[in-house]
Length: 146
Image (cartoon, rainbow, N blue to C red; front, top):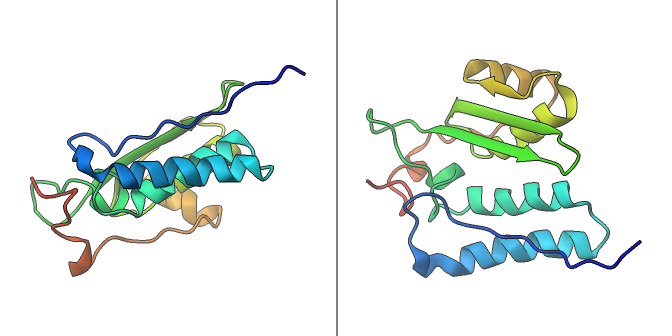
């Protein structure tokens, strides 16, 4: 098998401040460390995305932009493998780590995209942890202030 270089590229989401590069570097490092210790690329990417989703400075997960109601967030996530497996969720509300559900869609569903409440129901059925973002600590983070 030929040698190859691994790489993970991360970004903080649309409109994120470039001065927060430490967060994107941390996410990439997390994924690279996982692969260096035997983890597969998909698991590494999912973990890297979760680092970004958990960092309120980015337009992902806890830092996602608020909807017009000023209280809720609607999020999307997707993941894909080099063997053309794909899983995605769209319009899931107040979910801290939508990448977990997208990964579940890839692994457990005959579908490639689940939307809204269907994604939440799917997560519950497949025991995918769902952490809600409905709380005062999740409002007006640097990532979601318009």
